[in-house]
Image (tube, rainbow, N blue to C red):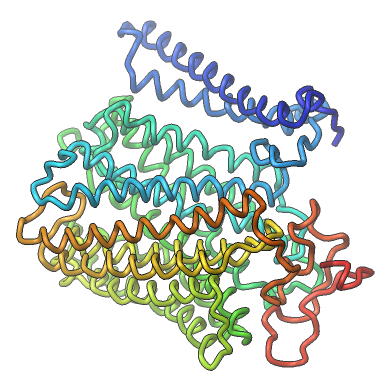
Length: 625
């Protein structure tokens, strides 16, 4: 591949990076104008008024998205080669590379992490707004319409964080390092998958200017076919995000299959890499069904189809089946990487081999195998045929078996271990405790009789948050605190990290445990008002939620200290872990390893005179550090 200096690069790295962003925005705006004009011309030729917002906006976005990608770097770093022309060089090597279309998997990982942590904090702020509203029973604070819009925006932002923060961020950064590779299999596709994300955030925020989407993050018809035009922006955003997820999943699968270092057999693969592997199959196989559901809604709105209109032969339940055929497997897209992080941290900080390693891997693969046959338990109250109730009750209960294997591995690892209770370990233990509650309460929603009583109540809200925050968000912070010394070369404040954990852990449980009670009391989720008898409990929940929200202040202070480089330098391997990422400098060099490592033993052989997990031929251990 021939490279030439980018024109902007000659003007300095700052100009180089930010010029591509400006060019991407200009290309996107120009593409939108062209697409909208094309829609206007088609409508005029058909004898209609030239402007219909939803039709013109949809076609405009369909042109704007590839134009944005071409402007942000696809043209310079990729498409020029298709025409036999030289591509641009690597660009800046300082902090400005985080704003550029880079091919380094580590930079892309940081781009994902920073983007989705920021999105997490924004979605958390919206949650605080919702809890202010719910301190009064009559729904008068925000009003029904605004409450529904804020609820929907909070929900879809948190779903995006749960889907992509661990896999896109830490998966991109550390899977190649863990398996001894120098990059992912398709670096340019990797960069493309990240730069699909900014338009998603823009569309979701911009939707509020067009009436928002009061259908919630599930977007059920007929409401999603009839509500404000902000729903169109929501649909386009989620379809785009799904494309990013599919591309990322495919890249991880090929990377793990083809780029493992010599000696890195499947039986020596670090458990976090296994979790990303299982998650990637789910993302690759199921995400297109979500896109299909949202495209059908979009066509009902802009093309006159009637997929969900009963009066014209449509079937509203069709949407729910297609939507949940993806969206329940998506729960495992969220929590499988969380399980991987938790097990990774638990074994290193227990100084024990990972208990039942093969059974934990079997648990991941069992979840993968069963994830596609459990979706209809979300439809128990929707009027599906009675003969489907028992089979889906059984399959939903069955998936608790492989999940139980993962929990068994976690508990067996910490049992009789020499626990080192540093911040990453505390968050990993938080995963075990919180997800256990989420799993136990999920049994009630898998069984038809109890689900009939509890469906769409705040019991479901509490269960869902224990599952996702417990299985993914606590794991996200475990990963941040565990790998930040490797990523930055600096050590954060342990005291601030401990304050963050205890405030978050106690605030989280004090917020969501009472929600089970208000759910038993009959409080409906996604409804702006509730019975006055439940107001005192809701005030308690809101106050505890504010404490939970405040828990992230020490985290932000800690991260600011790292960004300003006021934190002390970290030693090369502060946790004395065995896996490959700790055998290179902090931060890792551009191509990860000076030579390809050779794996000699299991990554978790603690407790005995086992050989090193891997060696770098011809490189002294001290030099590798």
